[in-house]
Amino acid sequence: MPDILSSLPVEYLFTIHATVAAPVPIPGGPAGTRVIVNVTGGTFTGPKVSGTVSMGGDWLTMRTTGTAHLDVRVLLITDDGVAIHMAYQGIMGPTDDGVRIITAPLFQTGDERYAWLNDVQAVAIGKPSKDAVDYDVYRIL
Image 1 (cartoon, helix red, strand yellow):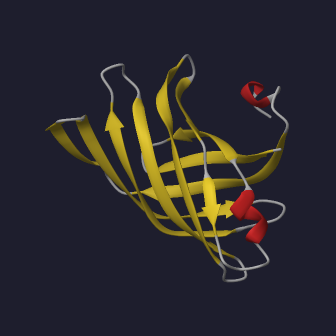
Image 2 (cartoon, rainbow, N blue to C red; image 1 turned 90 degrees about the horizontal axis):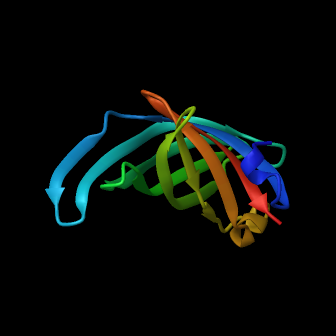
Image 3 (cartoon, helix red, strand yellow; image 1 turned 45 degrees about the vertical axis):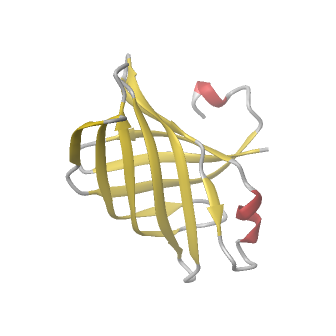
């Protein structure tokens, strides 16, 4: 478990690997530079829920501080065919070890097998790469 989570009571939910298309920047907007990133697929795997990342996108805003504010929505499809909406906001920024992302996911589903996710506040710690982003997602207890 990452040190950042050592003092929070958490339960590991899953690891997500999401593939992404090339970012599309929109510079010079009134809120700064927008960058739109299409989520093209991926997988998520955990002890209680696993499946594929169907689609999604990130509408991030580059900040003058060198960080970025993320605004992401993705559609997860479980191995047994259930659709789960996962939305999160967070901050991406430089660290001594590269770039780190910290987000706060929320979930929505109507299927009773996964309805417990509707009441979860999660935290996710991630790292971007050229064509993907990886997160470990934890339920805050």
